[in-house]
Image 1 (cartoon, helix red, strand yellow):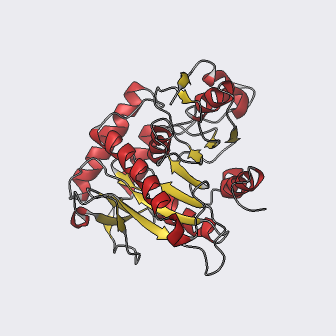
Image 2 (cartoon, helix red, strand yellow):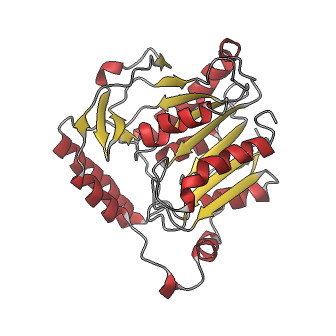
Amino acid sequence: MDRSTPIRHAGAAALMLLAAGAHAQDTPRKPGPDDFVRRAQANPPRPAPAPSIQPIPLSAAGSCATDMWETMFGQTTLRNVTQPALYPALPPAGQANGTALVIAPGGAFLSLSFDNEGLLVARRLAERGVTCFVLAYRLDPTPQDPAAFMQVVAKRFGAIAQHGKDSTIDTPAVAQAQDDGLAALRWVRAYAADYGIDTKRIGMVGFSAGGRVTMNVATAYDAASRPDFIGVIYGSAPKRAVASDAPPAFLAVAADDGLRGQASLPIFEDWRAAGKSAELHVYAAGDHGFGMRRKGTTSDHWIEHFAQWMQASKLVPQ
């Protein structure tokens, strides 16, 4: 692929200030990494059953026996994934519209927000006829003990605080998760006929770390693993060029996101500079990780905006 346009970061901060509001004295303090860690430590994970969905392994390596299903903030999470897998969420019988979506939850490559940024998203879009697959990609190993796990979480987010809120996580799981995302798209395309999927309408959407996975996939694919469209919800991009056949992109972030508040803007700038389709939504409030959580802000409606964008872009039937 011709990757002729580099990922640029100039002007992102200025654009975010314009999107967030006019004057600093009128802008509330953005929550940062320390705030997230304090909230997480006050809500440590507790064991939970796995969802009653038969996973589709993407590799013979690893084992689902390492999976640790838990609840945090009242939502199901997953960590210590060593065998990547897809969890299907299918439309009601006879209502599939031919569009498919691989969904990559976030979790700082330490865990997966399986409900809030995965299964709940999949079920909402499946109601609209989209055939969905939640991707459990490989993660960095973490201690089984919840208290020790929270120490690892604090260390990771402490590094983000030290190096800047839009700093890049660089661990073995990042490259592994990219491979898992590419494998997921290849699998869905290979088995498209079994699900009534149009092989030219297979997309990927990711949240936070899952957004990074989506952007890694969107800058490293081959013909079999190319996403036909992408959604990046408060995610960041690698420092790679925009491909000559880069897919259309939907981007969403909250202006008060203290972790990835500016990361969507360079993606939008670069896609547009390369002559590629991109749509950016900056919601006034919603913080990091809004996903399917009701926040009482306009970020609650991101999924409707995403569905409207898919329809307007002819990614789902009219």
